[in-house]
Length: 315
Image 1 (tube, one colour):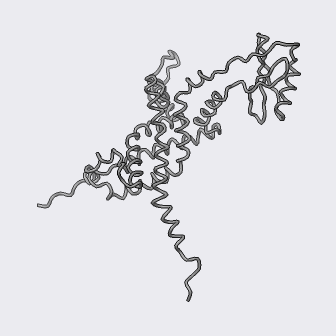
Image 2 (cartoon, helix red, strand yellow):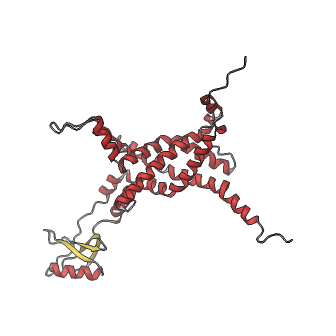
Image 3 (cartoon, one colour):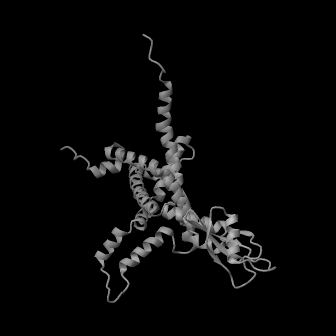
């Protein structure tokens, strides 16, 4: 009696390379990675820094600026004129004077719809620089980059698409990585003794499989944070809100924890350190993946084009 043919699952476990689906997923993984590679670099690097957003803002919190009290104070009209001379093209929308006569005044200037707060000496009209220290402003800029890609609601929508593609990259990467039961242990590590091309391949695979749960977590939670409406609707369907008691719902706690998990806002310094460190690995995946694509696909095609004769063969 002939032995029964192994099931699809058994064949997949032993020799996944033989499946057309795997080759198709490889193409999805490749082109998705190329499409969002630089986006992932920007999001992951900014996210790793923003894990410490509270600490950065506390460290660089704006401090009072004191001046020498000498002579009469300038009027608000005079301060506004001095500010507009110092920043041509800007208009003054607000001037904040402190109770302490030795404190600098804060002048809010608008130019092209972008306000900034500048400190001025209320006695001389001297420009004392931005009220917010540069690291504090950079933290705010990184937050806007990470949340909205500096483009408001449009950027947030793009972030939603990016989160979906990141999730697809995680799923397809895990499927492609599986080498079969005979080689999965070896595929967990990096072959540092191999030729550099093989080294890049094993590095990409090892980092990918060790971080895949983080990638899927950031992708799925990122979808919720950028496109919350379907999740909120599902939460309301599972556990309708009681307008009479206003009691907290379990689904609300779940969604609250989704945001906390995304940013690593739990567990103390060790969790933050882990989130920040792992957040820097997806850019490594992009770089190694790009190198593999360039050396295996692009460079051979360039070489082929260069070897073709410029004109037709003589007859």
